[in-house]
Image 1 (cartoon, rainbow, N blue to C red):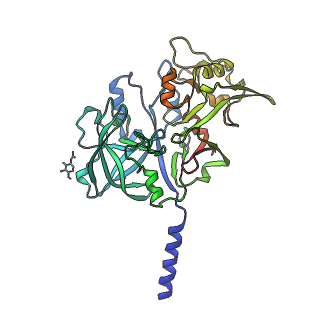
Image 2: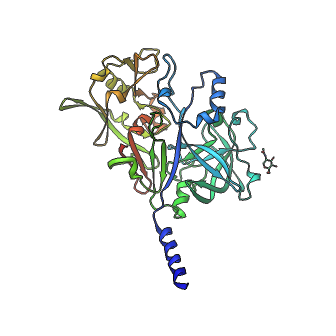
Length: 404
Ligand SMILES: *[C@@H]1O[C@H](CO)[C@@H](O)[C@H](O)[C@H]1NC(C)=O
C-alpha cells in the first residue's frame, strides 16, 4: 500500500517536471476596411458562428475593385477564459506589444457593442487596485487581476486591461473581444498595460512552461485544411519540416528581423536585389496580410515581375496570364532565402484575370513615421502561412521553418 502510494507520488513528480507546451487553437478573421459600409461590418461581426470558420480560399479571392485588407484587419484569434466562474473571450494576438486587454462590461460606448464583455463583479477571483491604463490611440480603462485559462492551464493573478473606452471602433465589430500581447515585456513606458506581468512573463515566472518561446502556425486556407495554432513553451515539431533557422532580432523589445533583400531564381542562376539600409527592418506581424516593403523595395521587385500600381491604385498587380512562367522569388532574412513560387506570390482577384502581388508597399512613408514605428517592412500572414515561426524571449531570436 505504502509502496504504491510512493510510486504514485513519484509519477506525479515526473509529470510535473515534464516540459509543458501549451497548444492554443487559432481562428483567422478578415475584417473589412472602415470605408466600407458600416452595416456590413455589423453583420460580419455579429454572425458569430460563421466567424469561427477558418479563412477559406474563397475569402482570399477578393472581388475585383474591392479593397483587400491592408492594415490591421486581418487577425489571429485565440480563446481565453477569465475569472471564476470562467468568462470566455476571443482575443486577437498582438505581436507588436505586450499589452493584453478585454472589453469591460462597464463600457457604455457604442464602440464596445458586439463584444463579449468582462464582468468583474461576476468573478469571485477578480482584484482591482485602482490603476488605470491608456494605450496610444485606443483603448483606455482599468487594470484588473484575475485567473486566466489558456491552452488547458490556469494562470493565477494575471494582470490585464479592462477597456472602458475606445478612440474609434472597438474590437467587437471585428468579431473579437480583446487582445493578447505577445511582444517582449521590456519595461519601457507604454510597452505593456500591465507592467512586468504580461502573460508570457507570468507563465515563465510560475514555471508553467519550460522554454521562453512561443510559436505560430497559421494553417491552411484550403477548405478543411489544418487550422492555426499558437504554442507557448516550446516548438511543435509536427508543424514544420527540417530545422528552424534562427535570426537575431534587430532590437530588443520587438519581433523585428533584418530583411536584407530579395532573391530571384533564374534556372540555376540567382539574382538579388539588396535593399537600402532604411528598408531593412522587418516586423513579423500576422495582422498584416501581405509582405509590406518600403516604396523602392516594393517597386523594384514588382517591376521585375511585371506588376505595376497606377497613381490612384493601392496595390501592385498584373494580368494573371503568364504568371506561372515567372521565376521563384525569395525574401532574404539575414543570409537565408525564404522562397515563394509565382502561384504563391500572386493571388488571383475575383475577376480571375487580375493577379495581386504579395509584395506591397507599406502604408506610411515619411522618415519620422518609420523612426517612430521602429520598422520599415512587415512580414505578414502570407509569409507566416508558408513559414512556421518561433519567437524566443530568452535569446531575442525569431526562427522560421517550412510549415507542413
Ligand atoms: C455583472 O455581474 C453582476 C453580478 O453577477 C450583475 O449583478 C450585473 O448585472 C452584471 N453586469 C452586467 C453589465 O452584466
